[in-house]
Image (cartoon, rainbow, N blue to C red; front, side, top):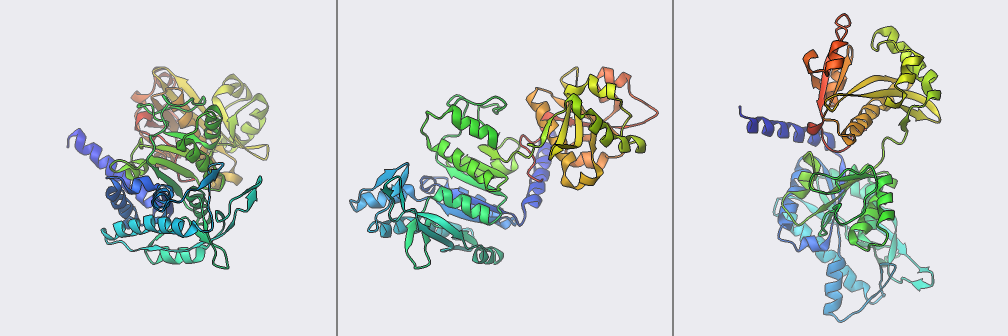
Length: 450
């Protein structure tokens, strides 16, 4: 089999891995109204059909701003804005509803071409925004409640729910809602795995914005991912800019603060964007993700007694080689610890070698906390740090945990694969297995499964 065939098989394997991971999980997908008018819109719907048929629960929130503007202009109606929010007059709301349901029906009609059942429904309870800083927003509303029970019923019956940006109060009064805010609230209420903002905007590129330290762009200059903290710094650095992309970044930060693990921002004016973002190594958009590593920090000298305490049971069992206080002090800068309520419950180290190689070592977790995924988070954190520092490969030596490291992407290696210094010091009596991870083959985003 040639190299192209092997690469194709690896891609297929990766796709199936991610399909299994996301089966029965909810994705909330907000589609800008500009995208609905685009040449590639039918292709986007075909990709959403693919996700649905793979067992992913697809929920769609259509944006309607452009369509609202078109209908209001057609009827000679002008509206005002305050703080970027449309002030919706009571007499205007029928036209807003017309636009919101028009884009929803276009999506429903498009999905029917792929023999999918979709429903447009009123699963949102809303209330008036009222008067803010002296401005009466009239028939513009806030989301009061997402009716999750009927939404889940629709999903369980294999329908795709389409939620227009209109909500009603208990008396039946309609309100114009922000589709972006609606997306966040629906995703939070439905415990969605991911949010996708599919826009017509150009993707975030380092040539157009100032970026905070620690954000590593892709080879084409695209800002491919930021955690919530970095995204907040990004907004602060670019506070003078006034683009829709920055507004979506704000919404993405709101999403992860509302419990969503991953928020993806992609351009919908192309072929296969959402599938590329989910299933390819590099993706095509920008991902804002919840920082799973906020309890990980560098080890300091004061941590050494606790780290030794955690290591001792593993040393006695033979899983770790013995280390002394002096050993840890000598390489204190290589270690990180996992802390809960100011108490250390896990540790790991990343040692750098010649040839842009690194070693992951001394991975240990307090047995009482081993079911929290701390070990996986420590390893993933060190992999990200190795990538950021320019390392090309990682290795580790293990006697007990080969299967576990394979699940994290490591593959069996040979003693000959070790850097010269490590190869010379290899303990043949211990007979540890060598595991290798090529960082250029590692998926360039933090794992979703925590």
